[in-house]
Image (cartoon, rainbow over all chains, first blue to last red):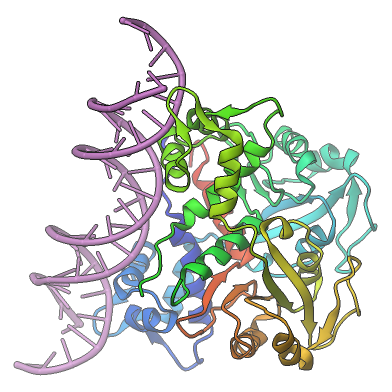
Length: 210
Length: 210
DNA sequence: TAGATTGTTAATCGATTAACAATC
DNA sequence: TAGATTGTTAATCGATTAACAATC
């Protein structure tokens, strides 16, 4: 019953390792955790433990086989299973996300956008934007597991409720507001202003003298 | 010498409290940490400790004065000091950020965009997009503390170096790559694909049976 | 053997929660 | 006084780091 424990931190480090390993010169066949740590600025024990958690390919003295490691990370992150997604709210940000190419690499497919008043029929990238009243129909014809909310804060809860009713399992929320959802739905808030403000505060704390 | 310790978690919770408190019905003059915690889904002790850290306005039995609390949070987050910012890379995402209204509330001013080939002269919101070769001039005429990078991964390090040379103190990096910066520069990576993938994995871990 | 590396166990650190004392 | 609340001290939890044993 209790879901498998996954560390969110680990989940964000693994793709970083993966990118790094993939970007290595082609002739590299083996790589050590120590080297990865050094190049990426992580602690070496941390990397070693992370890799041990998701792979058993590490050999003493030689390190990890590059190929095996890539396969193990991709396997752990389950890149081969497609995950269907839609986005509600197709302003600038919504359209940017609709045409963002980075998601597919992870097996995530953003199928379409929805908007109370679609600003255009299709994005430049060719994704269709439907009026809101088509949301339920669309969701019953496709397997949609993740919903992205990029509408103004005032509409976010309403949109969220509709997505939940459509059977969505996770919500990525860009609206600057908290959402109430049932326990089986996973929510991640991505409030860009809050995030940027945190950076600003850390920057200030980083100043030589106050 | 050692900079003041600030918990990043705290920094992201404070704006949430602030929004919540501001959204309370106008007649509310006092609010307890317990109430805030209950409504926002945080632990009550956590909220109490957070508020104690940034305010001394809590009175037993009655809770915190709404007005004082708002002032104390805004004060702690230093909303009154303007922070100048620029963004490099004005694709969809870059333009979305340029016209995003949420930053100003926090005292952050995104002054202009830069692009190797500006897609337009101005955003719909009226922000000017300059060609890249004006970057250094612009930065010497304005006080710019934060640089936002929204260019393809291949150009990110180069852009980053130029921003650092311009005296920027913090970088908000949307490019899917790690950046090398000197120690006095604060970097925050905002890789949307990684972030979304983490949500996807948490969603899977949240499923009833495996 | 010596060196490079993994992997594990214990220690530390930071954040959150629990328990409870203080007080209006 | 009883109740609601703050604020503090101790306990727990999770993540990271340190120390070190294993081994190719």
